[in-house]
Image (cartoon, rainbow, N blue to C red; front, side, top):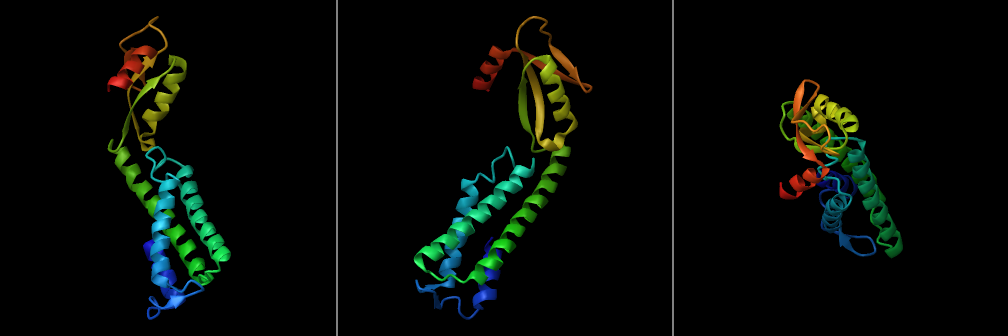
Length: 191
């Protein structure tokens, strides 16, 4: 984002006029750039683009990044029009696409790295699957066959004690049965 804003600033205002007051508010381009970067970072946080549940796991991650970027620049354009700040549109026209593309590419590269780590059983979230055998086993099979999703199944809790056994075999892996749903609630609150 910082690089995109600097590129936009240099392309629009040049290196010599970074501190020269511009627009109706007479703000130097550098001040506008710093405020923009800070606002952009805060907006990405507000849209929860770093939520562990979505990082590296689906298109929702990219969607949140794009939505946050468009929101920042949409609000900036509205503020510019309302208060007649006359922030250069050329600056925005460069910073928005370059910054958004840079964020998406960095997320894609991070996703590739994270996927390789997860294939080596690193950076995985441990999960306790709770459900009936008929619903839990297909989910556990999917999680075990796709470590790049980022989950390691550590156990299972079934609805009742009827037919309760010590483990279940899922895709050649023994998954420990920790008991019933009530036992799972106890494990969750204690663990």
